[in-house]
Length: 233
Image (cartoon, rainbow, N blue to C red):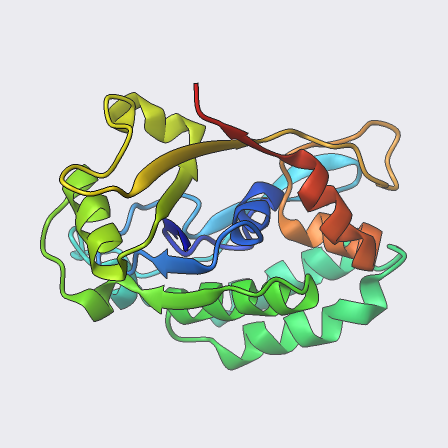
């Protein structure tokens, strides 16, 4: 059984879902410290042929060490603006009408906590992309370690056969072929930017999954497959 572990990011990029498609279990890191101005609360869409950053406003004043699970959304008016930007950006996309109403409802029904909004959006995209993966929260396992030890301990709790992570993680995990003290293999992946249909003069890579789904619909799964690479060198 393959496992991946990551923070629940906002409208994740395509590679996030390519990884989800390759594992059976996925742990959302919800009990670690929230990082302001990170992918946990922002991501890129296409607007007028250019990458445009949209950001969920959250409460951070005097909450310097708050956990991801505790982060509250502070201004629903800004959420409405984000929805409007998504609408204006993609209303002419081929598959916009197939998905936008459900996405809009998820925003409306998750006004309080960032974690809930992010996870519900991720689960929606996962369902539409026909990805079969089991989600759990890191807080469920009551692991108190940090950094790579946190990853190691979660892998042991799940008792997976293989842990799959980004190629960037090789900087601090590269000295290990297996999770220390176990037979759990560590594998690294990268996602190659595969060009797909965009209504732009120039292809824009590394946008939110929104861009792929609105433009390619059910064909999005093929793009995920083509771009995913395991690198174990």
